Image (cartoon, rainbow, N blue to C red):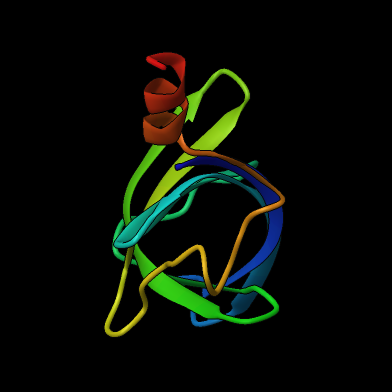
Length: 104
C-alpha cells in the first residue's frame, strides 16, 4: 500500500548509541515497509517505531539514496505484521482497490 505518514524511528548505531529520527512512511505491507530518512542506515540494523495501537520492528534490508533522501526497506521481524485493522497511516492508497474501482 502506498501511504504517507510521519513516524519517529529508533535504532542503535554501530557503537551502541541510541539514535532517533523522523521518517516518512512511504509504503507498507504485511511483511515490511519503506521509510524515507535524511540519513542512511546500515544494512541489518534493527529499527523500531510505534503507532497508537501497534509497535513495529524490523531489519534494514536496503538503503538507497534517491534525489530527496534515503529510502530504507524494512523487513518486519518476529511476530510483527502490519494490518489495516491495527494501524492505518494518515494517507493510504490501495492500488488494487483503485484499479478495481476504475474498471467498473
